[in-house]
Image 1 (cartoon, helix red, strand yellow):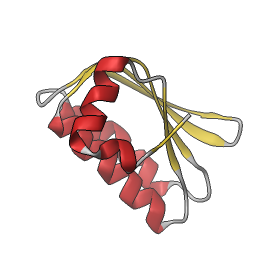
Image 2 (cartoon, rainbow, N blue to C red):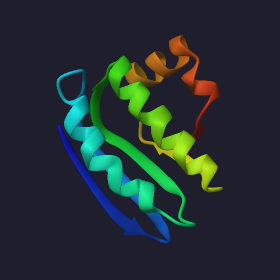
Image 3 (cartoon, rainbow, N blue to C red):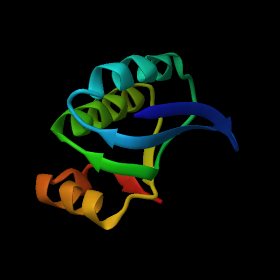
Length: 100
């Protein structure tokens, strides 16, 4: 699992590549801690290269969203494939996030 964070068009873009499963979640969580210092930028979780997400991954997404909302920022998800979209639909997460 690879996580890359970059600034783009005034937003923070998080590119997620690979399988966001239980073994990968602790490292991804560490990678995402820099988002906590964000002030005023929206966050885009780019899932174009994400092939799988487990409940551990969903928990991380939820944590990113909660932290962003406290600061008045938005979290958008982009590029999810049909399999991941189904996971979001089955868990109700489809109603929690904004998709681009």
